[in-house]
Figure 1 (cartoon, rainbow, N blue to C red):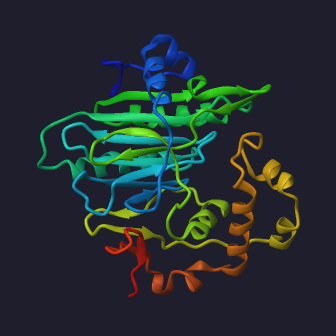
Figure 2 (figure 1 turned 180 degrees about the horizontal axis):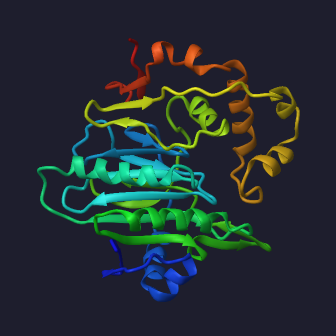
Length: 310
């Protein structure tokens, strides 16, 4: 009994997005406000990009980050948790795997970063999960809502730009209106965004998802201001050459939950990931030597992440 919808403490979690919007139509207005904000293309300087099945948390005074963000959310949902008193924020890109544990991590990270600041409320914003024909987005929405509803703290849902509120028709096909968002950690402003440069180790991070990791990885060490990837391992991929020999359309149809609405870079990005897996069949040996994470620190000269050499 800890989810707060439109200022009212809830006994039960909404079963789906339609029920939420029927009972609390104010979320239509909130979504419309987000749609009215012009999308921004965010460069790499001061950016902390969060990939699928990743999360990160930071405080407004963090000198290494200006924007934290994620994109490519079709059936996935981008989740933002913010403490209203301190401005501490956590962002995750959920596809349904590892949600329970990640929700607890997000809230605890925000609470840690809010220590010593004025009291405030925990605010929750959901963006993504368009109305797809298979209902994948609804499943992700329900798993997220259930996880937050089970949490012992009161959590205010202040944005739910999901389901029908993040869906438009292109011809006869439903497609997302917003694929990604950024959060200005200094001000708390949230806005539609794309991220042409997503920072380091993208193929490595994508490989973890492609090979079936079920957990959500916390990729930022806020105490030391460092991007942290891994360590993790996966089994060798069978038939990599066979996958690489297929057409882009085949990859879309067999490796996407929403093949009709994926961004153009889906197939090239998937091929690059498969090649990386082919070349790094045992990342515990070739990438994470001595079982150490790969750490990146913000370069003062360029403003981008640079690998820390141990």
